[in-house]
Image 1: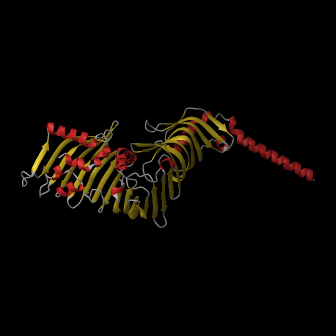
Image 2: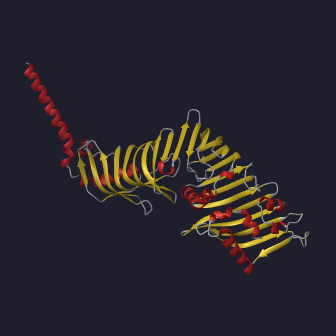
Image 3: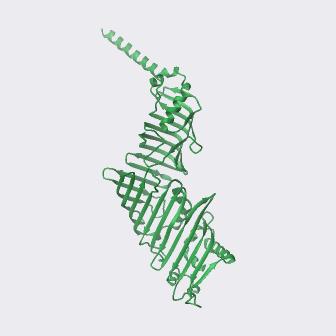
Length: 468
Protein backbone atom coordinates (compact mmCIF):
# COMPACT_ATOMS: atom_id res chain seq x y z
CA UNK A 1 0.00 0.00 0.00
CA UNK A 2 2.78 2.40 0.95
CA UNK A 3 4.66 1.52 -2.24
CA UNK A 4 1.54 2.26 -4.31
CA UNK A 5 1.11 5.63 -2.64
CA UNK A 6 4.77 6.50 -3.29
CA UNK A 7 4.40 5.37 -6.90
CA UNK A 8 1.33 7.57 -7.40
CA UNK A 9 3.14 10.48 -5.78
CA UNK A 10 6.14 10.03 -8.06
CA UNK A 11 3.89 9.81 -11.13
CA UNK A 12 2.05 12.97 -10.02
CA UNK A 13 5.32 14.85 -9.49
CA UNK A 14 6.60 13.60 -12.85
CA UNK A 15 3.53 14.78 -14.75
CA UNK A 16 3.56 18.06 -12.86
CA UNK A 17 7.21 18.69 -13.78
CA UNK A 18 6.56 17.55 -17.36
CA UNK A 19 3.60 19.90 -17.65
CA UNK A 20 5.66 22.75 -16.15
CA UNK A 21 8.52 21.99 -18.54
CA UNK A 22 6.18 21.92 -21.56
CA UNK A 23 4.59 25.15 -20.32
CA UNK A 24 7.96 26.88 -20.02
CA UNK A 25 9.37 25.50 -23.28
CA UNK A 26 6.23 25.81 -25.40
CA UNK A 27 7.20 29.21 -26.93
CA UNK A 28 10.28 27.51 -28.44
CA UNK A 29 7.90 26.03 -31.01
CA UNK A 30 6.78 29.50 -32.08
CA UNK A 31 8.51 31.72 -34.61
CA UNK A 32 8.51 34.89 -32.52
CA UNK A 33 9.76 36.98 -35.44
CA UNK A 34 6.25 36.69 -36.86
CA UNK A 35 5.08 38.75 -33.88
CA UNK A 36 7.36 41.78 -34.48
CA UNK A 37 4.45 44.09 -35.21
CA UNK A 38 2.70 42.94 -32.00
CA UNK A 39 5.79 43.62 -29.89
CA UNK A 40 6.41 46.98 -31.58
CA UNK A 41 2.84 48.03 -30.82
CA UNK A 42 2.98 46.78 -27.20
CA UNK A 43 6.35 48.36 -26.36
CA UNK A 44 5.42 51.56 -28.18
CA UNK A 45 2.13 51.94 -26.31
CA UNK A 46 3.76 51.22 -22.93
CA UNK A 47 6.61 53.67 -23.52
CA UNK A 48 4.45 56.11 -25.50
CA UNK A 49 7.01 56.34 -28.31
CA UNK A 50 7.41 54.99 -31.82
CA UNK A 51 9.14 51.60 -31.75
CA UNK A 52 10.86 49.68 -34.51
CA UNK A 53 12.47 46.22 -34.19
CA UNK A 54 15.17 45.46 -36.75
CA UNK A 55 16.80 42.43 -35.08
CA UNK A 56 15.64 38.91 -34.18
CA UNK A 57 13.28 37.95 -31.36
CA UNK A 58 14.21 34.86 -29.35
CA UNK A 59 12.80 33.02 -26.35
CA UNK A 60 14.72 32.40 -23.10
CA UNK A 61 13.53 30.13 -20.33
CA UNK A 62 16.40 30.75 -17.88
CA UNK A 63 16.53 32.30 -15.32
CA UNK A 64 12.88 33.27 -16.01
CA UNK A 65 10.68 32.82 -19.08
CA UNK A 66 11.34 35.87 -21.24
CA UNK A 67 11.89 37.06 -24.76
CA UNK A 68 15.11 38.65 -26.03
CA UNK A 69 14.83 41.34 -28.71
CA UNK A 70 17.85 42.57 -30.65
CA UNK A 71 18.11 46.11 -32.04
CA UNK A 72 15.14 48.21 -31.02
CA UNK A 73 14.88 51.80 -32.21
CA UNK A 74 12.82 54.22 -30.09
CA UNK A 75 11.66 57.74 -30.90
CA UNK A 76 9.73 59.69 -33.52
CA UNK A 77 12.28 62.24 -34.76
CA UNK A 78 16.00 63.02 -34.98
CA UNK A 79 15.99 64.50 -31.47
CA UNK A 80 14.53 61.41 -29.79
CA UNK A 81 15.72 58.58 -32.07
CA UNK A 82 17.65 56.09 -29.92
CA UNK A 83 18.85 52.53 -30.41
CA UNK A 84 18.84 49.73 -27.82
CA UNK A 85 21.13 46.76 -28.52
CA UNK A 86 19.34 44.21 -26.34
CA UNK A 87 15.89 44.20 -24.70
CA UNK A 88 14.56 41.51 -22.37
CA UNK A 89 10.87 41.20 -21.43
CA UNK A 90 9.67 38.79 -18.74
CA UNK A 91 6.51 37.00 -19.91
CA UNK A 92 4.04 34.25 -19.07
CA UNK A 93 4.55 31.53 -21.73
CA UNK A 94 0.82 30.90 -22.18
CA UNK A 95 0.30 34.57 -23.09
CA UNK A 96 2.54 34.05 -26.12
CA UNK A 97 0.54 31.00 -27.12
CA UNK A 98 -2.68 33.01 -26.72
CA UNK A 99 -1.08 35.98 -28.52
CA UNK A 100 -1.58 38.21 -25.50
CA UNK A 101 1.19 40.79 -25.40
CA UNK A 102 1.83 42.91 -22.31
CA UNK A 103 4.80 44.34 -20.43
CA UNK A 104 5.25 44.60 -16.68
CA UNK A 105 8.98 43.89 -16.42
CA UNK A 106 11.44 45.01 -19.09
CA UNK A 107 15.25 45.39 -19.20
CA UNK A 108 17.32 47.43 -21.67
CA UNK A 109 21.02 46.76 -22.23
CA UNK A 110 23.59 48.80 -24.20
CA UNK A 111 22.33 51.82 -26.06
CA UNK A 112 20.43 55.04 -25.52
CA UNK A 113 16.96 55.57 -24.04
CA UNK A 114 14.90 58.78 -24.49
CA UNK A 115 12.58 60.13 -21.77
CA UNK A 116 10.40 63.18 -22.37
CA UNK A 117 9.60 65.21 -19.26
CA UNK A 118 7.13 68.03 -19.81
CA UNK A 119 5.65 68.66 -16.38
CA UNK A 120 6.38 67.93 -12.72
CA UNK A 121 5.18 64.43 -11.74
CA UNK A 122 4.58 63.78 -15.42
CA UNK A 123 6.45 61.07 -17.35
CA UNK A 124 4.77 61.17 -20.72
CA UNK A 125 7.20 58.66 -22.15
CA UNK A 126 5.22 56.05 -20.22
CA UNK A 127 1.57 55.10 -20.43
CA UNK A 128 -0.83 54.46 -17.57
CA UNK A 129 0.63 51.03 -16.82
CA UNK A 130 2.41 49.37 -13.94
CA UNK A 131 5.88 48.68 -15.24
CA UNK A 132 9.36 47.89 -13.90
CA UNK A 133 12.28 49.00 -16.03
CA UNK A 134 15.94 48.02 -15.71
CA UNK A 135 18.83 49.73 -17.50
CA UNK A 136 22.25 48.15 -18.01
CA UNK A 137 24.91 50.39 -19.55
CA UNK A 138 22.30 52.71 -21.03
CA UNK A 139 22.67 56.42 -21.83
CA UNK A 140 19.45 58.00 -20.57
CA UNK A 141 18.51 61.06 -22.63
CA UNK A 142 16.19 63.39 -20.68
CA UNK A 143 14.34 65.72 -23.05
CA UNK A 144 12.42 68.78 -21.89
CA UNK A 145 11.24 71.20 -24.58
CA UNK A 146 14.36 71.84 -26.68
CA UNK A 147 16.86 70.96 -23.93
CA UNK A 148 18.60 67.60 -23.56
CA UNK A 149 20.46 66.18 -20.55
CA UNK A 150 22.32 62.88 -20.91
CA UNK A 151 23.11 60.48 -18.06
CA UNK A 152 25.65 58.02 -19.45
CA UNK A 153 26.60 54.45 -18.49
CA UNK A 154 23.45 54.15 -16.42
CA UNK A 155 22.64 51.03 -14.41
CA UNK A 156 19.28 51.54 -12.78
CA UNK A 157 15.85 50.28 -11.74
CA UNK A 158 12.66 52.31 -12.13
CA UNK A 159 9.18 51.37 -10.90
CA UNK A 160 6.35 53.31 -12.57
CA UNK A 161 2.60 53.23 -12.09
CA UNK A 162 0.07 55.49 -13.80
CA UNK A 163 2.80 57.79 -15.14
CA UNK A 164 4.18 58.30 -11.62
CA UNK A 165 7.58 57.12 -10.45
CA UNK A 166 7.35 55.06 -7.26
CA UNK A 167 11.01 54.11 -6.93
CA UNK A 168 14.36 54.77 -8.62
CA UNK A 169 17.83 53.35 -8.04
CA UNK A 170 20.32 54.79 -10.46
CA UNK A 171 24.08 54.65 -10.96
CA UNK A 172 25.26 56.88 -13.78
CA UNK A 173 27.69 59.48 -15.05
CA UNK A 174 26.88 63.12 -15.71
CA UNK A 175 29.49 65.42 -17.26
CA UNK A 176 32.20 62.80 -16.46
CA UNK A 177 31.15 62.71 -12.78
CA UNK A 178 29.84 59.35 -11.45
CA UNK A 179 26.83 59.68 -9.14
CA UNK A 180 24.17 57.65 -7.35
CA UNK A 181 20.49 58.59 -7.15
CA UNK A 182 17.80 57.02 -4.99
CA UNK A 183 14.12 57.98 -4.92
CA UNK A 184 11.25 56.35 -3.02
CA UNK A 185 7.90 57.81 -2.00
CA UNK A 186 8.82 61.19 -0.52
CA UNK A 187 12.62 61.00 -0.36
CA UNK A 188 15.24 61.84 -3.00
CA UNK A 189 18.98 61.39 -2.44
CA UNK A 190 21.87 62.17 -4.80
CA UNK A 191 25.52 61.39 -4.03
CA UNK A 192 28.71 62.02 -6.01
CA UNK A 193 31.92 61.08 -4.16
CA UNK A 194 34.21 62.72 -6.71
CA UNK A 195 32.89 66.20 -5.86
CA UNK A 196 31.85 65.35 -2.27
CA UNK A 197 28.23 66.03 -3.19
CA UNK A 198 25.45 64.86 -0.90
CA UNK A 199 21.89 66.04 -1.51
CA UNK A 200 18.64 65.01 0.14
CA UNK A 201 15.04 66.17 -0.29
CA UNK A 202 12.30 64.84 2.00
CA UNK A 203 8.63 65.75 1.54
CA UNK A 204 6.16 65.05 4.34
CA UNK A 205 2.75 65.34 2.67
CA UNK A 206 0.85 64.87 5.96
CA UNK A 207 2.17 68.06 7.52
CA UNK A 208 3.26 69.80 4.28
CA UNK A 209 6.90 69.93 5.33
CA UNK A 210 10.08 69.68 3.27
CA UNK A 211 13.74 69.33 4.25
CA UNK A 212 16.38 69.98 1.59
CA UNK A 213 20.12 69.65 2.20
CA UNK A 214 22.91 70.30 -0.29
CA UNK A 215 26.52 69.75 0.72
CA UNK A 216 30.02 70.63 -0.42
CA UNK A 217 29.67 71.77 -4.06
CA UNK A 218 27.57 74.85 -4.73
CA UNK A 219 25.58 75.79 -7.80
CA UNK A 220 25.85 79.38 -6.62
CA UNK A 221 28.87 80.64 -4.65
CA UNK A 222 28.19 80.96 -0.93
CA UNK A 223 25.51 78.27 -0.83
CA UNK A 224 27.75 75.38 0.24
CA UNK A 225 26.35 73.03 2.90
CA UNK A 226 22.90 74.49 2.45
CA UNK A 227 19.85 73.44 4.47
CA UNK A 228 16.23 74.40 3.72
CA UNK A 229 13.39 73.61 6.11
CA UNK A 230 9.81 74.75 5.74
CA UNK A 231 6.21 74.06 4.81
CA UNK A 232 4.68 73.97 1.37
CA UNK A 233 1.29 74.02 -0.31
CA UNK A 234 0.39 72.06 -3.42
CA UNK A 235 -2.95 73.17 -4.83
CA UNK A 236 -4.35 73.81 -8.29
CA UNK A 237 -1.15 72.50 -9.89
CA UNK A 238 0.93 75.06 -8.00
CA UNK A 239 3.74 74.15 -5.60
CA UNK A 240 4.55 76.98 -3.18
CA UNK A 241 7.13 77.38 -0.42
CA UNK A 242 6.67 80.51 1.65
CA UNK A 243 9.22 81.85 4.15
CA UNK A 244 11.05 78.56 4.57
CA UNK A 245 14.28 78.79 6.59
CA UNK A 246 17.51 78.62 4.59
CA UNK A 247 21.01 78.47 6.05
CA UNK A 248 24.61 77.60 5.21
CA UNK A 249 28.07 78.47 6.49
CA UNK A 250 27.85 81.96 4.96
CA UNK A 251 24.14 82.82 4.82
CA UNK A 252 20.95 82.74 6.83
CA UNK A 253 17.48 83.86 5.80
CA UNK A 254 14.21 82.95 4.07
CA UNK A 255 13.48 80.88 0.97
CA UNK A 256 10.42 81.31 -1.30
CA UNK A 257 9.59 79.09 -4.24
CA UNK A 258 6.64 78.97 -6.63
CA UNK A 259 6.02 76.65 -9.57
CA UNK A 260 2.85 76.18 -11.61
CA UNK A 261 3.36 72.81 -13.23
CA UNK A 262 1.36 71.99 -16.31
CA UNK A 263 1.88 75.52 -17.67
CA UNK A 264 4.57 77.67 -19.27
CA UNK A 265 5.04 79.59 -16.03
CA UNK A 266 8.72 80.03 -15.15
CA UNK A 267 9.52 78.71 -11.62
CA UNK A 268 10.61 81.47 -9.24
CA UNK A 269 13.13 81.12 -6.41
CA UNK A 270 13.54 84.05 -4.04
CA UNK A 271 16.19 84.28 -1.32
CA UNK A 272 15.77 86.95 1.36
CA UNK A 273 19.00 86.72 3.31
CA UNK A 274 19.34 88.32 6.75
CA UNK A 275 23.02 87.64 7.33
CA UNK A 276 25.75 86.93 4.81
CA UNK A 277 29.53 86.92 4.62
CA UNK A 278 30.04 87.81 0.97
CA UNK A 279 33.60 88.78 1.85
CA UNK A 280 34.27 85.08 2.52
CA UNK A 281 33.14 83.97 -0.95
CA UNK A 282 36.16 83.12 -3.04
CA UNK A 283 36.48 85.11 -6.26
CA UNK A 284 37.64 81.94 -8.03
CA UNK A 285 34.25 80.32 -7.34
CA UNK A 286 32.39 83.32 -8.75
CA UNK A 287 34.49 83.10 -11.91
CA UNK A 288 33.80 79.36 -12.31
CA UNK A 289 30.09 79.97 -11.76
CA UNK A 290 29.96 82.61 -14.49
CA UNK A 291 32.00 80.54 -16.96
CA UNK A 292 30.51 77.08 -16.40
CA UNK A 293 27.95 76.37 -13.67
CA UNK A 294 25.46 79.05 -14.69
CA UNK A 295 25.21 77.48 -18.16
CA UNK A 296 24.51 74.06 -16.61
CA UNK A 297 21.51 75.58 -14.82
CA UNK A 298 20.27 77.40 -17.90
CA UNK A 299 20.72 74.41 -20.18
CA UNK A 300 17.99 72.32 -18.59
CA UNK A 301 15.91 74.62 -16.39
CA UNK A 302 13.81 77.68 -17.05
CA UNK A 303 14.10 79.59 -13.78
CA UNK A 304 13.80 83.03 -12.20
CA UNK A 305 16.30 83.51 -9.34
CA UNK A 306 15.99 86.55 -7.06
CA UNK A 307 18.46 87.23 -4.24
CA UNK A 308 18.08 90.09 -1.77
CA UNK A 309 20.75 90.86 0.83
CA UNK A 310 19.95 94.07 2.75
CA UNK A 311 22.96 93.75 5.08
CA UNK A 312 25.91 92.43 3.13
CA UNK A 313 29.53 92.54 4.24
CA UNK A 314 32.30 93.40 1.76
CA UNK A 315 35.97 93.83 2.46
CA UNK A 316 36.13 97.18 0.64
CA UNK A 317 33.07 98.63 2.47
CA UNK A 318 31.89 100.44 -0.67
CA UNK A 319 28.62 98.48 -0.84
CA UNK A 320 26.43 96.90 1.84
CA UNK A 321 23.33 95.83 -0.12
CA UNK A 322 22.86 93.28 -2.90
CA UNK A 323 19.95 92.65 -5.26
CA UNK A 324 20.16 90.00 -8.01
CA UNK A 325 17.42 89.11 -10.50
CA UNK A 326 18.48 86.40 -12.98
CA UNK A 327 16.29 84.52 -15.44
CA UNK A 328 17.22 81.34 -17.30
CA UNK A 329 15.18 81.01 -20.50
CA UNK A 330 15.78 78.39 -23.21
CA UNK A 331 19.48 78.15 -22.39
CA UNK A 332 20.08 81.91 -22.21
CA UNK A 333 20.85 83.86 -19.02
CA UNK A 334 19.11 87.21 -18.65
CA UNK A 335 20.53 89.56 -16.03
CA UNK A 336 17.39 91.58 -15.34
CA UNK A 337 19.04 93.41 -12.44
CA UNK A 338 22.31 93.12 -10.60
CA UNK A 339 22.66 95.92 -8.04
CA UNK A 340 25.34 96.60 -5.44
CA UNK A 341 24.51 99.66 -3.36
CA UNK A 342 24.96 101.68 -0.18
CA UNK A 343 23.80 105.09 1.01
CA UNK A 344 26.45 106.75 -1.19
CA UNK A 345 27.23 104.31 -4.01
CA UNK A 346 25.37 102.26 -6.57
CA UNK A 347 26.40 99.84 -9.31
CA UNK A 348 23.63 98.54 -11.59
CA UNK A 349 24.16 96.01 -14.39
CA UNK A 350 21.69 94.59 -16.92
CA UNK A 351 22.22 92.30 -19.87
CA UNK A 352 22.33 88.80 -21.36
CA UNK A 353 24.82 85.96 -21.27
CA UNK A 354 24.74 83.95 -24.50
CA UNK A 355 26.74 81.24 -26.24
CA UNK A 356 28.21 81.93 -29.66
CA UNK A 357 30.01 78.79 -30.81
CA UNK A 358 32.73 78.15 -28.24
CA UNK A 359 32.53 81.66 -26.82
CA UNK A 360 30.34 82.77 -23.92
CA UNK A 361 29.51 86.47 -24.23
CA UNK A 362 28.01 88.79 -21.65
CA UNK A 363 26.26 91.74 -23.34
CA UNK A 364 25.87 94.40 -20.66
CA UNK A 365 24.70 97.89 -19.79
CA UNK A 366 26.07 99.32 -16.54
CA UNK A 367 26.02 102.44 -14.44
CA UNK A 368 28.14 103.26 -11.42
CA UNK A 369 27.52 106.42 -9.40
CA UNK A 370 28.75 107.85 -6.10
CA UNK A 371 28.34 111.05 -4.12
CA UNK A 372 31.31 110.23 -1.91
CA UNK A 373 34.20 109.58 -4.26
CA UNK A 374 36.71 110.57 -1.58
CA UNK A 375 35.63 107.74 0.71
CA UNK A 376 35.87 105.21 -2.11
CA UNK A 377 39.39 106.32 -2.96
CA UNK A 378 40.46 106.02 0.68
CA UNK A 379 38.81 102.62 1.17
CA UNK A 380 40.56 101.27 -1.92
CA UNK A 381 43.94 102.77 -0.88
CA UNK A 382 44.48 104.36 -4.31
CA UNK A 383 47.73 106.34 -4.67
CA UNK A 384 48.00 109.95 -3.49
CA UNK A 385 48.19 111.41 -7.00
CA UNK A 386 44.62 110.30 -7.65
CA UNK A 387 43.51 111.36 -4.15
CA UNK A 388 44.79 114.90 -4.82
CA UNK A 389 42.30 115.29 -7.68
CA UNK A 390 39.33 114.83 -5.34
CA UNK A 391 37.13 117.87 -4.74
CA UNK A 392 34.54 118.62 -2.11
CA UNK A 393 31.53 117.61 -4.21
CA UNK A 394 32.83 114.05 -4.71
CA UNK A 395 30.41 113.44 -7.61
CA UNK A 396 31.42 110.71 -10.01
CA UNK A 397 29.55 108.36 -12.39
CA UNK A 398 30.30 106.00 -15.27
CA UNK A 399 27.77 104.73 -17.81
CA UNK A 400 29.00 101.94 -20.05
CA UNK A 401 27.80 99.24 -22.47
CA UNK A 402 29.42 96.52 -24.54
CA UNK A 403 30.20 92.85 -24.16
CA UNK A 404 32.59 90.65 -22.23
CA UNK A 405 34.04 87.42 -23.62
CA UNK A 406 34.02 85.15 -20.56
CA UNK A 407 36.26 82.50 -22.14
CA UNK A 408 38.95 84.90 -23.31
CA UNK A 409 38.51 87.37 -20.44
CA UNK A 410 38.41 90.24 -22.89
CA UNK A 411 36.04 93.22 -22.86
CA UNK A 412 34.75 95.24 -25.80
CA UNK A 413 33.39 98.59 -24.60
CA UNK A 414 31.07 100.04 -27.25
CA UNK A 415 29.89 103.14 -25.38
CA UNK A 416 31.31 104.88 -22.32
CA UNK A 417 30.47 108.13 -20.59
CA UNK A 418 31.91 109.61 -17.38
CA UNK A 419 30.68 112.53 -15.28
CA UNK A 420 32.73 114.21 -12.53
CA UNK A 421 34.02 117.47 -10.99
CA UNK A 422 37.61 118.65 -11.32
CA UNK A 423 39.89 120.84 -9.20
CA UNK A 424 40.36 123.39 -11.99
CA UNK A 425 36.64 123.91 -12.42
CA UNK A 426 35.02 122.38 -9.32
CA UNK A 427 31.50 123.68 -9.81
CA UNK A 428 30.92 122.51 -13.37
CA UNK A 429 29.86 118.95 -14.09
CA UNK A 430 32.30 117.56 -16.64
CA UNK A 431 31.14 114.88 -19.09
CA UNK A 432 33.46 112.83 -21.25
CA UNK A 433 32.05 110.59 -23.98
CA UNK A 434 34.57 108.09 -25.30
CA UNK A 435 34.54 107.75 -29.09
CA UNK A 436 36.91 106.75 -31.87
CA UNK A 437 40.56 106.58 -30.83
CA UNK A 438 39.69 107.49 -27.24
CA UNK A 439 37.34 104.51 -27.01
CA UNK A 440 39.95 102.21 -28.55
CA UNK A 441 42.49 103.44 -26.01
CA UNK A 442 40.03 102.79 -23.16
CA UNK A 443 39.47 99.22 -24.39
CA UNK A 444 43.20 98.67 -24.69
CA UNK A 445 43.95 99.97 -21.21
CA UNK A 446 41.04 97.97 -19.73
CA UNK A 447 42.18 94.68 -21.28
CA UNK A 448 45.91 95.15 -20.76
CA UNK A 449 46.05 96.88 -17.37
CA UNK A 450 42.99 95.45 -15.61
CA UNK A 451 42.00 92.07 -17.07
CA UNK A 452 45.39 90.87 -18.31
CA UNK A 453 43.60 87.81 -19.77
CA UNK A 454 42.19 86.72 -16.40
CA UNK A 455 38.49 87.03 -15.55
CA UNK A 456 39.26 87.06 -11.83
CA UNK A 457 40.88 90.50 -12.24
CA UNK A 458 37.39 91.98 -12.53
CA UNK A 459 37.35 91.88 -8.74
CA UNK A 460 40.39 94.17 -8.48
CA UNK A 461 38.41 97.38 -7.84
CA UNK A 462 41.29 99.85 -7.36
CA UNK A 463 42.42 99.34 -10.96
CA UNK A 464 38.97 100.33 -12.26
CA UNK A 465 39.25 103.81 -10.79
CA UNK A 466 42.70 104.31 -12.26
CA UNK A 467 41.10 104.24 -15.73
CA UNK A 468 39.31 107.55 -15.23
